[in-house]
Length: 263
View 1 (cartoon, rainbow, N blue to C red):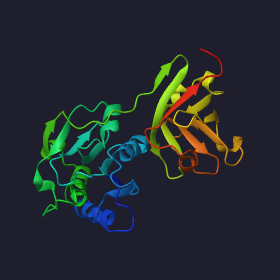
View 2 (spheres, one colour; view 1 turned 135 degrees about the vertical axis):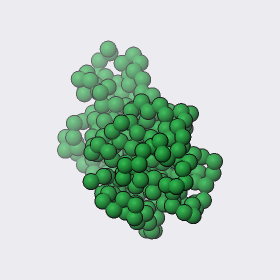
View 3 (tube, rainbow, N blue to C red; view 1 turned 180 degrees about the vertical axis):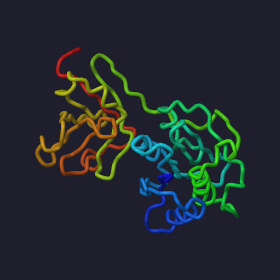
View 4 (cartoon, rainbow, N blue to C red; view 1 turned 60 degrees about the vertical axis):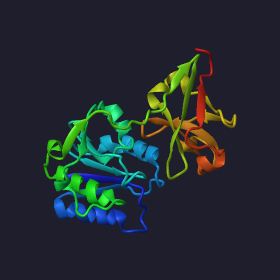
């Protein structure tokens, strides 16, 4: 049974996500549609990009990921689809798919130009319903990428924030804030080798220092900590609180981890 997984910034109050599902089921009635989230902040391309990166590898082979955070809808930006050989990815060419493309070494994508596979008439403000949902459904039903349009390689890419190691200091930045207010950094868990597991983190914007922990219950309520997160990246939390609000930092703010002894 094919799986189609949705990420949008449509929220839950309106009919937009539900209408996309209706279009999908009209084309691919045997599909299983999974809502990864519809709570991406409006126009939050980087958050949507990370959300897909964080979870796609847990899905079964053949899943079609439809990522619709599209502030440029109706403009000259392209609609695209691609595959890494295991999954399909569908969305606007605004960088929302680029971190998965980077990880999976996707070099070419398909510009969705064959309107046979669209819903008509195509609205200039709702390509999620009229282009991305039907294309996702057709892919899940076995239509090949080659039938959907033409390939190109100069697709929009958002550079993943680099993490650096300099004189024993690991430097990265905040790339996502989850629904608990936890702050996800660009520092991969693999960089936290044993010598860093008794280390401290400094938030460069405020100068505040945090200690490393393995799990929340090592700390008192409202203590601040950093830890290796489940999505593969170092995270910052306040035990029982909202780190984003308490620490007053946001996406793009930089952090620095220092080992206890010089390396």
